[in-house]
Length: 173
Length: 141
Image (tube, rainbow over all chains, first blue to last red; front, side):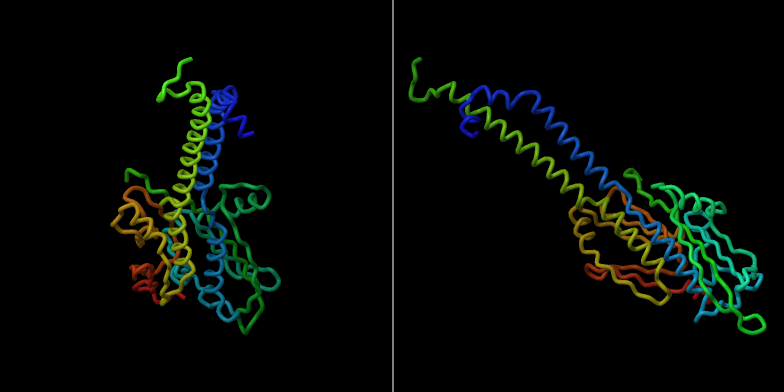
């Protein structure tokens, strides 16, 4: 083979034909496009964020398995109580819904919904379809105890979602 | 055909030149491709995004009174390679955003949802983040 490459003039000429450059452009272009696509892809942390948000909310309203009494107060502020930034939720990057039910399924207080008000529907859609650039949701139900003329059993439902896309700072900024 | 001492065989010359040129061109092309892949994989943009998301998630998970230490060696190495001496990590408490810059131009911003007072500084290659309760908010738990 080597003998042929080095001695056969015709073969040498063929090696440097325009077709070889076409192949190089295709292979090189393919590698370049793949690398650009791979490294420009987002590191998706939406689900992790939604899980952390759930843990933060649940860990703040349930203390030692008992629902905090403040949650039944009319002026209950979840943001202050749980150390959450209200303005971030107003931007609708994050959303959550909290439901407090007794053991028969009756609502104990009105739902707390913050962030994008339509996020529940988006979460339902997300369960049915595969969408890449869509919000990610986490839904958990916790069995709790709460005070109301003694200790009673109840259920806490928390649905959290994140739809945050990071911001690439423009080169000219 | 007359052949002098310094006159090379034209036919033999062209026979060797083609494959040599072929190998050299191939080497150039594949070296350029390799350099491109290496540059892309160790580029500032990838690390800016990774670090800003990592810091934002750490802040989301943190509780008041915590001190977080993050190994930032690779980030500092890239910033040094890019001759960038500016602020590498900025935590904007107004917009709740972590901005990481490893080069003069560009950067990456990612928001966190915790509402705490955050102080960050570098201790050699370690990024130290101190999370504290927001002043005037004693209810946060």
